[in-house]
Length: 144
Image (cartoon, rainbow, N blue to C red; front, side, top):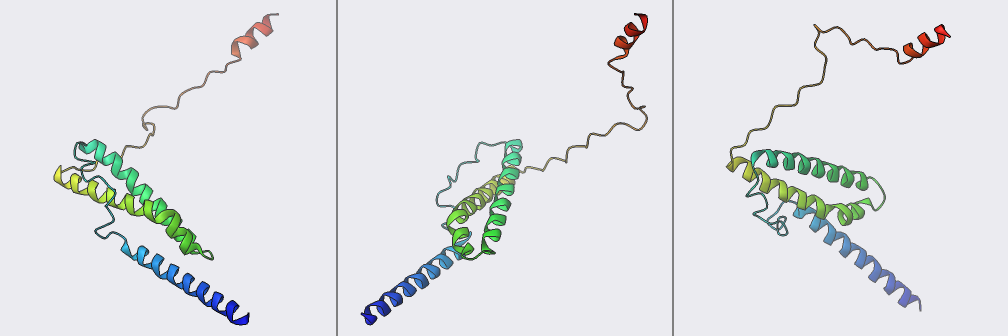
């Protein structure tokens, strides 16, 4: 009976080690040749520079968000497994799409738009005067 319990524990430990090795191998795949396997290579072929720029920002933000979630998951107990299972595929897909987008960006010779100006009032304009909403009501109260 003791031998059976011991062999079950050994099998369980070996299974956990095998899962860990498999997940670490998947984590190291990263941006390899299979990373874009599920991304349509012609997805951005008909985008103009303005559309590419908007999509570029979206994908960059998404990849950064997923990387932050993976990093946060890695800080907890068993978080590496959670990070790999929950976020890694989305992260790899976002990076593969971003790579295709960058290729189209260069091919189309796109240039990033300048940042939008901040909304500030001109220094030569005086501040706007605010009318009191109740001034008409007060003048009628004074007459009565």
